[in-house]
Length: 370
Image (tube, rainbow, N blue to C red; front, side, top):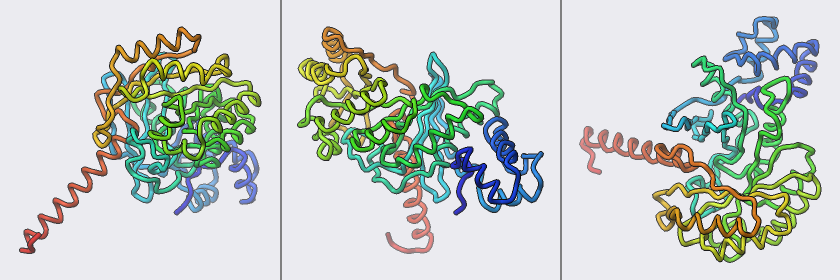
């Protein structure tokens, strides 16, 4: 299977050009065709010699994704289901924010982190996405607006779709360098957020990359017993280990960390847990921020439900009284398959049901008993 050229940094494109006995300026031309003109094929790169176009086609594909489903919400959120070259499915979400268009990208097919409330983990990890497959998500969303002549551009990225980004570390780092390149999409590093469930060693590595990308940590509980019961990753990297890595990240980068906290009714949303959370983050309060997230129910996880507005308000008030920087996150796409991984899971379920129905019909036609 040929790699997507989207998976190459500008320097790697330059190296490839030189290896193929071309002048270095050809790399600049290719890069501009890819990210400024956003062409749909190599043949559209009209200032390149045919021999170079042929070589590009020989070595690379341009777009490795096929669009299967697009769901549009009343609030402007758009959810995409993309098919990979091997037939596997991933989700990408566009959210309209007051500050611009934000895209949430997927980094793995399935997830092995094992969060008991999450739709993404309903199907175990099948494989990592390549850097090209991650970049292609941004490109297809941008082209969605280009084709409608809406004169809008993707301005922000959150790397917190299906999968654990820091478990696909090298491909995610290449992706970040491609989308941040100032001669390409030029999405500012401070407009990009990478989320992790708490892979402590990778947080330390990320701190030393020298990038200005934001870090978010999916915390969801203020103590080890509760966090281990809803997030399996905590058994390997308990809160003490996680926070040592977070403090190292802050000391190394002097950058703020955001904590994501999904509000699960009568599970992690009591005022006593709010106080524990305030105490836990006290040492890094000036460089941390807590994002309280309404839960999107998942039918397979019916033991959980959304916190009531009263419980959310009491939790929020306790944090604020302790001087914690926090906000209740605005919801997006509540009238479509809102939870991360939900569209993919529901589509796979429908595909299986359709396949079973076709097999049953074929057997009945052939007179074979089920």
